[in-house]
Image (cartoon, rainbow, N blue to C red; front, side, top):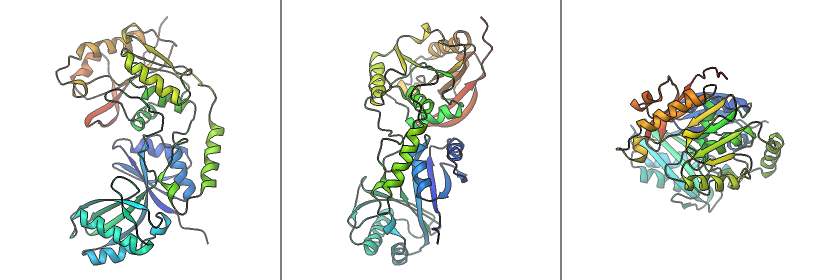
Length: 375
């Protein structure tokens, strides 16, 4: 008899749900529902492993263990103890239980977590509490309905394993990749990052262009599960390697005026073996000339909240506008910044593609339609 599919939930930064659902579709997996902060789908271990291996914009992937109704702690304990914990947790394993409870009879998050640990220990044998370590178990209690999930990813999926150096206010890899996918970037066009920082946009662009799976070289929580299938995981990794290109199909350039940022980007590129593939420069963006007739120009410039509220940024945004409109007229342009008056200094119309939060600051990804380049 064929096993019933599991229900999964992909956690995303709010605003990236459609981007992630499109990625899932490209893997041959049908999404079921999009809700704020995530995407639901179902499948077996193959689909779970594929999603962890390939999704670029996802934060983590949860498995729905079950749902129980409880209005008192004895009932909660009894019903949690019946859930199939043995599929995900080994006896003696540390468990980190996170609780969110509202509009329910049971609201004490600490006691709910303790009850969950007691129920797991009753089902499997002793397990230990793990504060920030071990298998993550997530409990969401609303209107006396307790939804229980386990995390299959482990570390946040933005941790690709290549960032060995960073500068102030780095952009998360998952956000950068999601922005590139929202722009329709697939590696076939030239790419230029105007203020690269530690190289996140350029590196994620290279991973997309090379068709390299972002989770290829990292570990996941599901590898510690009793039902882990290492042969299946290795098969999917080998298949991913076969899809990878050996060279970039088009130019990827990046520039920054800060030598320390350029050094950090070089170290991160070297960690992926891409130091010779991505062209990295230290210099002023105002002096740039386009390396191709068309492509994608992108920038994550400073905004007051990030580098000081009293910073004068209008001149910088004016220079950016000159680059987008005059120096790179045939290029598509994208910029990540808050929806403030600074946009007016760019001197052109930008359409918001995404709205999300970056480091606690509400920002949007704006894109302009390229003008025809004349010789």
